[in-house]
Image 1 (cartoon, rainbow, N blue to C red):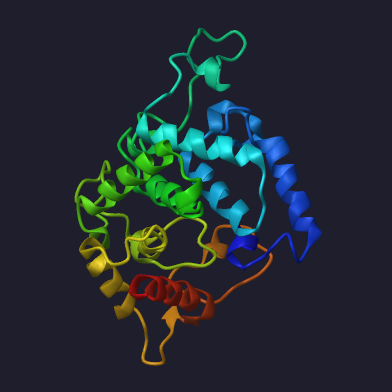
Image 2 (image 1 turned 30 degrees about the horizontal axis):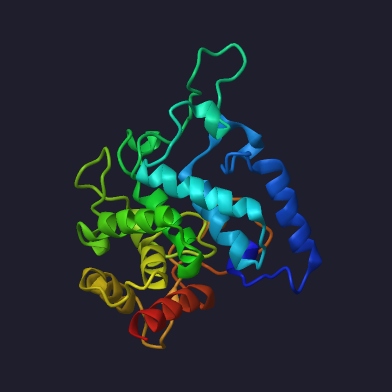
Length: 263
């Protein structure tokens, strides 16, 4: 994820390609689901979206990714999901009553997540939509196009700038939505804009307040600050800036969004 956001490419370093292949060999189930430790119980749309964004950004192509994109789309739409999970490579574990295997995070379609008490998760929606934006329109199946429509309807059902998404703390949005970060290991309002503009919705009136919010965070020198430094809680090898200070990486993220939106 970090290498992809830094602009890494398999063309400039063969080790990146080796790492990508290793990831698919050991963390991608045959049904198209990414999972830490290769366990079906641990699949989640956040991880799915992050991987299906990072790998194409690195220039990595593999036919197994087509299966992963298609499964992700079906997970969002609910169309064509197998009646028995074992048909999807997610059969019950040994000694567990079937036909369904317990999945820790994903619930019903439309981005449902157990960590959000089964409601649609805007974090998952953002990451999945970002992943779909990596696919040229010509490579999007009807299922993927339908999933994109569902995601667009989800975000434009309200004002993304208010981050008033479904959650167990109704009316109290997570403050992290307004904290721009780099690398973007989770998600923020800027990343919503990244996804929607890349999908061609930069000129949609529903995104106007979000773009205004992004512009308002720009300082007098034309830069954006790093609001959240993930390195306080995550083990990383490189520090990309201090919180509250102008940051070239966040500035690059913001400028790319605004350029895409107004082009």
